[in-house]
Amino acid sequence: MRRYNRLLSILSVMVFITSCSVFISPDDSPESASHGYVKGITPSSSEFFEERRYPTIQANWPGEGGDKTWLGRNLGAIDSPRNSVDDRAAVSGWYFQFNHKQGYYHTGTDLFPTWEHSGIREDSEWKPENDPCRQLLGNRWRLPTLIELGNFLHATQERGGLQQGNRTDAFNSQLRLHAAGELHSYDGSLTNRGVHGRYWASDQYSEDRGESLTFDAGGSSTYASNKAFGRPVRCIYD
Image 1: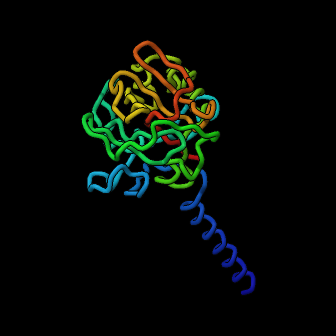
Image 2 (image 1 turned 180 degrees about the vertical axis):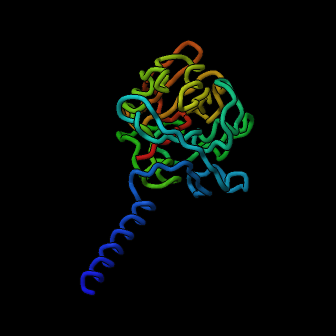
Image 3 (image 1 turned 90 degrees about the horizontal axis):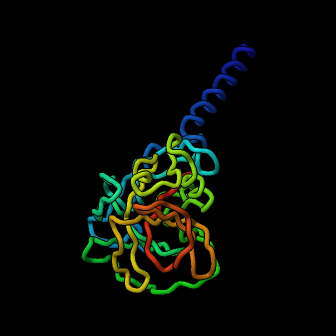
């Protein structure tokens, strides 16, 4: 009887561990991600912005970020782009200034909310408390680093990367990036939507310039530019 009870105890522990691993395994990657309205990040309290749901993508290229799960759409987008120059607001998502968590939405005519910062000068990387990926989707989500975006930039197209190609190649990559344009630092006016794509990294270059991935009809690269510009982001999961 004692051996039988001991066996039952062992089996109970095994069942508990197994069941826990199914639900809380740190190796599990989400098949989708979602969030609701968050004050100070969501562009407006309008019903239109209440909920967002995103597919995810499992990367397959070498180097940091190449074995991670990425958001399958721009943060704030409600649809996926049809092609590399899709200029619909629904697929562009929200735009963010460097190290600022407030999201901006541009319909093509109107901007929500009112533009606040025409200039940003601060000696800081993108802080976790200001990271819209982390604040909207949870602590295991964040903006990609410059190294991670760089590895995607140089990865071969066969492995799902950009291979330093142009905006068509960006759209045909695993991440399905498109030319969402940006918001001008001076007043938040919409610039080059459907022409080029510029996506923030979490690294700064200097007090007034942040790192980003850029592509257009001619090619692609990483470069540092004005932190006060509003740019889309793609989130990565740890």
